[in-house]
Image (cartoon, rainbow, N blue to C red; front, side, top):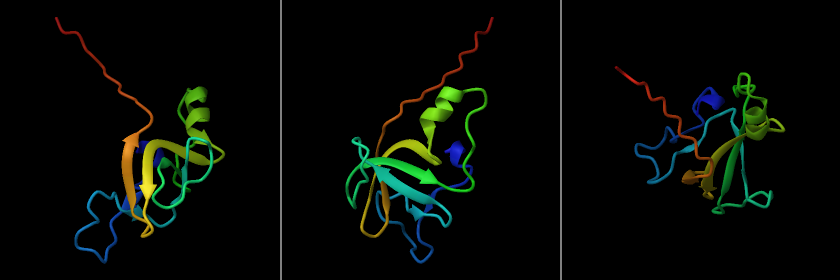
Length: 109
């Protein structure tokens, strides 16, 4: 995601093939938490929203304070992705919580 300014996860370099269905493990310098809908932290194999913190995060959205407040909360980027983390720290994306589809239709004559 562009707000992270870098990649968030990758497969372990010691593996030739990643874990099926996983997007990999966190890259160095990325802190993450998985937050359940009630605001509590999820445990292993429990679904919740992925939130990340990193020195490379964007500071917010240009000229959009409301979106910045909703997405960047207490230094954490709320990704809008529902994930589960296994005991092996593999991250699995389950669903998308935020729906954003931007379409630019250009009329031609």
